[in-house]
Length: 86
Image (cartoon, rainbow, N blue to C red; front, top):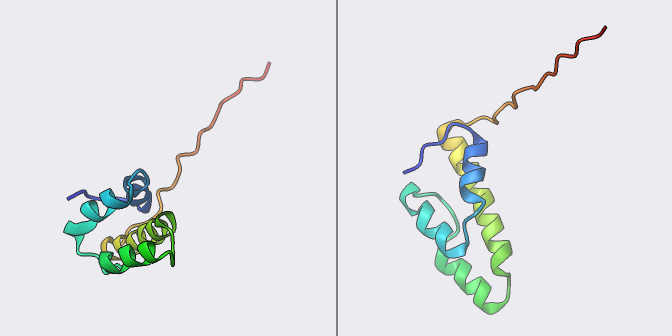
């Protein structure tokens, strides 16, 4: 299983996943997400599209992993440019 240090790490990990890959990748984490069968039925019935379901499930996964591992947002490193004046 992947280890996360920041919320950003979870988001970056999930970002490239497609619908099928998402369910495989998150299975070992035992997240309290909507049941995949329910999501599949919503997509099949036209109640929702796959992209929307995937986006919502990814958001819920980020929230749960953030809470579980007490993750924080990565603070960006400030880039300073020293300019010499004459």
